[in-house]
Image (tube, rainbow, N blue to C red):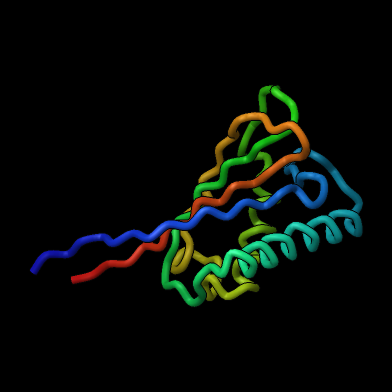
Length: 131
C-alpha cells in the first residue's frame, strides 16, 4: 500500500485594509486591537468572497507581502499581520483552529513592490494523505 500527498491550492489576495502590524512597532493596545480586528475581518470577507472551501483538515500557507516602497524588510516582523489574517480564516471556517494539527506556516516572504497600497497574497495549500 502506497501513501501519496494530494494537494489542492488557492490564492487569496487581501489588499491592506489598515496599517501593517509589525513586531517591532509599538502601538497603544486599543489601536493594536482595532488594527488586528480590521485585518482579521478583511481575511474573513475575502475568503468568503472567493468561496474558499470550509473544514479543511490541514493546510500550508505561504504569505507573500507586497509593500508600496522598495526597501529592505525583515519579513518575519510582519507575523502579527499574518496571525490576524489566519485568525480571520479560522473565523471563516477554512480550518478548525490555527494550531499545529491544522496549520503549517505561515511561511512569510516579501514580494514585488505595488503602487497603490500594500497587499498580502496567501497561497493556501490543502494537505491530505491518501492511502
